[in-house]
Every structure is written in C-alpha cells, then in structure tokens.
Length: 417
Ligand SMILES: Cc1ncc(COP(=O)(O)O)c(C=O)c1O
Image 1 (spheres, rainbow, N blue to C red):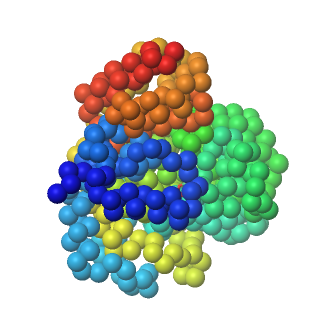
Image 2: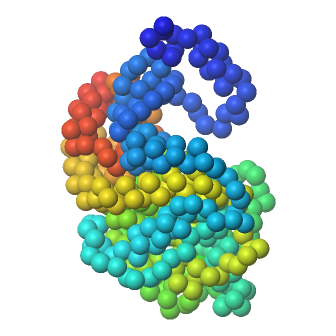
Image 3: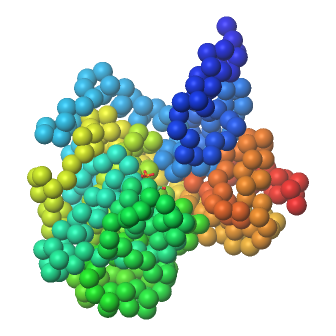
C-alpha cells in the first residue's frame, strides 16, 4: 500500500482535474492538505504544519473536532435536507445558544460579566455574504417602516462585507468597485474611528443603518476604538438608525468575547455571523434583537439550504463546545501571548487586533515571501497586501504552538532580510 495519498496516481490525476476544471478565483498555494487535528494540518506527503489561518477563520475548535464530527455523522445517517417549510432538528437549540451568546455582557478584554437579557432571533444562511444580505434586508425594512423609506447604509472605509453585489457595494474599498457594476444604490462609506465623519454622513440624510466590523479583517486587521463604537451606538440611538455589526470574522470568541461589539459594552441591533459558527460546515446567519427580530415575515426572505439539518447539527455542537470549553478565557490568554510574541519579532512595527485575530505590520514588503517560506517551514500563514501578516489560528491553539510558530517565523524573517 502506498504510504501517502500523493503516491497514488489517482491523487495526481485528481489534482490535474482540479486545475483544469475548477474556476480559479483564488491564487493557489503549492500544498495539498489532506487531514488535520486541532491546530495542525497534514499534507499529501505526510508533512505536518501549524495552522495559523484555520480555513480563513472557520475551524475554531480545530480541524475535524471529534465532538462536532460525531454530531454531523449522527445526522448524516438520519436526514440532511427537508426544506425550510418544516421543523429542523437542532436549529432551535442553536438559535437559542446564539441568542444567549449575543446577550452576554463582557468587560473590555472579553471576560464575561453578565447578560442583557435580550432575546435575539436568527435567520440561517450559508455564508457570510448571505448573512449580510439578510442584515441589509432587515435594515431596509426598518427604514421602510420607521424612517419614511430611508434605505441608505453607511459602512466604513477598508471594510469587507462579502462578494455578492450588495455586499460589495457595502464594502468600503474602491478596489472592489472596479468591475461588475452597476451596484445597488444606497451605500456609502466613511473613515473608521471618525465619529464626525459618520455624523456628517448621517446628517446628509437618507440612512437607515450603520454597518461596521469591530475589527476589520480583510481590510488589514484594523480595530474600531471602543469609544468610537460607544459613540456610534449613541448616534444610532439618537437618529433611530439600526446598528448592524458584521461579526462574520470576529464572532464566536475570535476576539475573546462571544461577539466583538461586547468589548465596547454596547448592544448591537443586527448581527451577521458565519465563519466560526459551525467548525467549517458552510453556515451563516443574521440575528436581530427584540422587535428587530420580527421585521422580516414569511415571504420576505429565504434560502433553500440555509440552516439545514447538517448545518444545524454542526452549528449546535460547535457553539455548545465553544461554551463548554470556556473558549473565551483561553482566547484572551493565548491572544495576549500571540500579540506579545509578534511584537518582539524584527521588522514588526505594529501588532493590531484583538484576541486570536491579529495583524503584524512589517516595515518591509516581506509578507508574501514569508507566507511562501512559511509553507517550507511547516507554517500556514496568511498575508494581506505586501506588509501585513494576518493570524487567525484555530481558537484551541496552545501557547507552545504559538511559540513554535514565532521561533520559525523569526528564522524566516532573518533569512529574508
Ligand atoms: C467581515 C466579513 N464579512 C463578510 C465576509 C464574507 O463571508 P463569505 O466569504 O462567507 O461570504 C467575510 C469574509 O471574509 C468577512 O471577513
């Protein structure tokens, strides 16, 4: 028997088919991962990597978590998809667990302090972009009902909200608006952390919602100031605008708190989520608080697959495990350790982010070569632009694994500079 998958001719052939027949919208790195466990991935040669990307922020409990795998396997043998006209097992439990997490209060670091007692209702979708589409509909319904038809959505520069046309319109980066227009109307963006700019945009009239990431991920790991978030909350209250927080990347303990808006001691009105919700099973959702949770009624919105039985099983098991394993406390400690160690590296001029969502800013354009060299050295790294490395490890990553990664990265930086 061949020792590794790569020795099998069938594997080589499958790779060629992938090259020839899959639409390549992502640049592909020269490695084939075939299995994983915790924060480790294994390639087709049996080489083990420390993973600091987690499937782009999804495998929070680590790869192939056995409890989640069991829950999905049990569901696989019963029923997968019945359609949203019907009750779906585990979905109510998942939605209640999400509501409990959304109503949690924390201090500025993420330690849990209590609960707001709010009840949140979730619409389940399949991805982050789709979750945001749902959020936009909730906001526009609010504008129709309460704000004389105001439909404007104000987002932040450098934000990222997805690849559908409306979520691209909401994304405050010009680079994403060069093709594929015309985009839906009613979107504008203002600089993050500038409350005067946001107030002026609101004063211009026509807005129904402000939409923000509390830590911008794809834009380069830029955190919103907590005071800014409080001021945004006050502005939205004063003008009756909905505060929509995109927690697709930051949600489910990525920043230490269950959701990143909680670090500012505020409540959001509408929250979109995806990546960390179901350990990598394609799932997303939009939750709305109190009366906002009843703005969409039958016929307003839908998704054939959204929240199906497999997704609900994966999501429920994931969220319950995150809570049972007290993941927030682990993330706070491991995140601080990661930030401290990153700051000690040569050529790192700034470390940004919160919890286990960190960006290291280099004073040289070495981020891309570091990602390539990282693979050689058994590290899965990710870069944003030429000079930022972004770290989104599985939340279960240990301090020892962080130290090993930092030691290897230190050597790579030395070699490349
Ligand atoms: C903050 C944020 N919103 C939305 C999205 C889009 O999610 P998806 O790729 O699942 O559609 C992403 C993806 O990276 C994201 O980081």
